[in-house]
Image 1: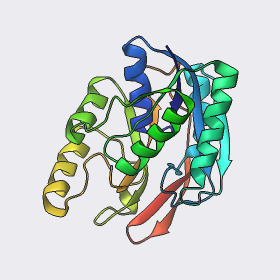
Image 2: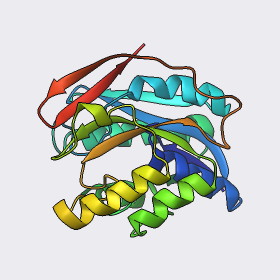
Image 3: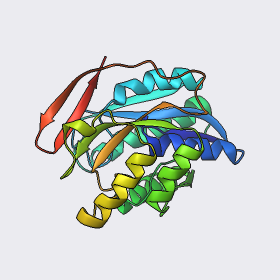
Image 4: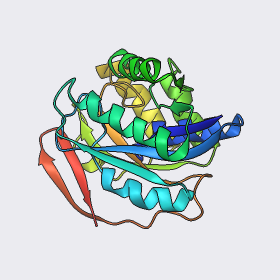
Length: 220
């Protein structure tokens, strides 16, 4: 089955694409939504522009649609992007990186139902510590592109997800109830290398902007 990947360049969408390919699906294209609303309910925004470089490293075409990011209305832009993928690449389903967000998963499922597409959610309800450990096991190199929760601060932006990160997130989960994989929006991520890439992503953080416990990287 030919699938389009709802793609943010972060760990969840990338790992979902990896699992779909491993299970025998054909990845036909990537679908990214560039939101002008940094606090979009649906779409990842930090480092979204780097999806263009990542798609080249994966050897897959990228469909990009922009949205103003207004709640619920932004779903129309997602649907338009998926329809474009159906026409251009004959996809019969989509891959999502949804882990625990009922808001996101239900709305994507509704669009798929409307368009007669399969919806493949390989990470749905997955234990978040196990998810992080699987990333390391499968040689994913991931950094944090943004944070938005106490006690995370500027120092966390650019940090790599490794075994020390996982141990620290376990402690923060126990103490502050932070979702270890950032599923509550506590942090966003960027995949800089993985088995789907031909080469490692070439990037540079030119600035880290924000205040308090909300920071994001700007990339060159």
